[in-house]
Length: 347
Ligand code: PMV
Image 1: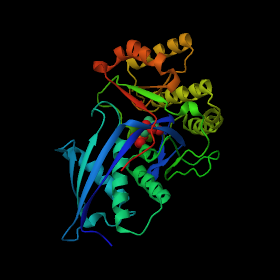
Image 2: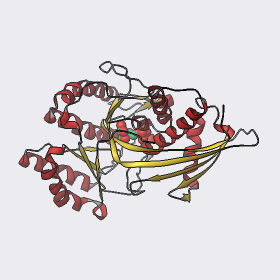
Image 3: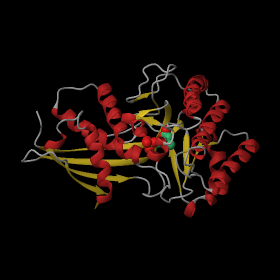
Image 4: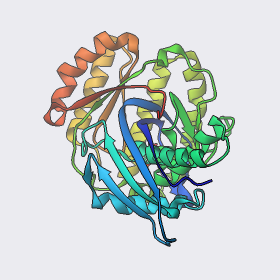
């Protein structure tokens, strides 16, 4: 039975891909499989107040508050999302929603909020559905939440659980699916517990090219086939790397993935560059320091200029002072975020 009114809320994290998703087909089906670390500090908190409407309508009805203020410019994205998920949540048009959302990280920091934002909203609607219907297992709940989040933003389907989530069908991973992310199903070495991700905010400006356009440019890309094959191979390679805790091999895979993502951008038609000079300076400093210190600090990149600096907990005392002294000066206004591997969304 449908309730008259109520409120649901969720806090959902961002994630950082180790093997990158870049290229998609119809209905947010990924062109290649990916895997990510779920983050802990970069979180979107969303609450949805719902109230039954008096009349039936063919339009969705909602108000959107971002950090306490009405945000008209975010509404079209939410409308598109609602249209895509309505088939799976047929009650949506029967309600008026007040969606209240805020991020733990500074907005317009260049940190994409689509993964955390879309997964938080998907979870709120799932919670609403759960309050109407018979018992749904946690497993089914998470799977459908991930399925819905994918329809908001592909990478959002990897933000429901943690610490490692895999998305996209591939032979080497049992249970992998194009439709939702799964908790990585194999054993992972302790060294990856509490892994750090210090996010260096190199450039907070609007991206010149959105990830939607970037994905599209993988159609007819001269290296698309090789790239998609490589992603499958890297997932396969990571199996033993993650199991054995082979950090040198880990670094080789994930830094190559980061640079390949940007290489795809630089070799598409039209071509574009999202890295900034400071992105490259940071990468070079990391390489120099890693060589000299014999630590396992490494980097990955998203579709932007910011750098995610990854390192294990037991090297923190050596690596973090290096980050503060040598890398933070390359950040815009000295801004960075200390994050680490996380366990997924929470009510
Ligand atoms: O979820 P989207 O459509 O914004 O795509 C994100 C793609 C990357 O962040 C660049 C890579 C990834 O796998 O998260």
